[in-house]
Every structure is written in structure tokens, then in C-alpha cells.
Image 1 (cartoon, rainbow, N blue to C red):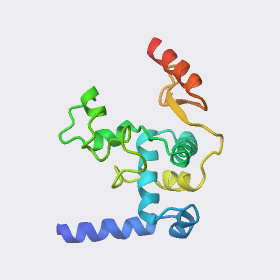
Image 2 (cartoon, one colour):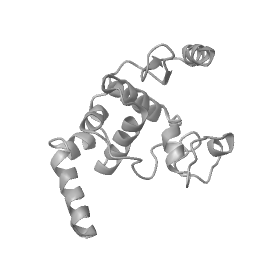
Image 3 (cartoon, helix red, strand yellow):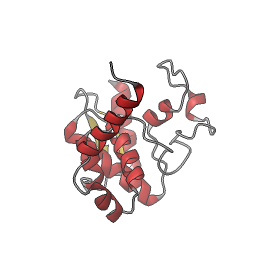
Length: 164
């Protein structure tokens, strides 16, 4: 049975083995540290299991960061709630003391919120560049999102989602 130290060393070695080639250089060219690139990739990973959407999620995050908007990623809010019970409440969404509350705090959270896949890591470097600012679950397609560029389009997509 491996020791805790051996497990941690193996996890770190695996991380470096699976990191895309020259990743640190590529994220630096986009103005991010390696740590920030991993954090951003973790947000992409948390927001969709749909591999085809990761570049669009990246596009939304990059566009919001560049505009100084809150990212509004509830998965990060949840990560910052000790003993989360599965019910995200209004008080959670307005809690300024939660440093992972990206509905209130601008920019990236203080740490990654999960272990990102290689596809999410690459999506950081390759956003779709479609100009998206918003997304909501698609009521007609399981595990898919509707991506929009304006708040009006987003609000209409939310209405369709809530109606369904």
C-alpha cells in the first residue's frame, strides 16, 4: 500500500506528464501564469461535460474577463461552500465572504475548483472567438448549453429554459 507521500508525488508527476507541451509558455502568451491557466481550465471543466462546448465556455470566460465582468460561475460558488448540501441558496449567491463567489468577485477564484481535463486545458488557449458573453442550459438538448452574445438573447434563452 503506497504512503500518502507516494500518492501525492504520483499525482504531481501525472499532472506534469499530462500537461500539454509548452503549456506554461502558451498561457503566458495570453497573459496568464501557469496557475491562472489551470484555474481557468478548472472552471471550463466544471461548466460542461460536453467536449464540443469547452471552446465556447472558454470564449465566454475570456470575453467576460476582458470586459471586467463577473464570471458568474456557480460551480465556483459551490466549491467555496463548506459542506454544500446540493441546494444553492440566494444567501450563497450574495455571500461576499466566499472568495469563490464569482457572482460578486471579479476575476478568477483563488485556486482551481477541480482537476481539468486536457481538453479544458487546451480550451483556455483556443476559445471559439465567437463573441459569446452568456450561456444557459439548453432545455431541448441534454448536457448542452445555449450560447448568446447579448443580455437580451440570454434572458430569452433563460425564459425558454424556465418554461421547459
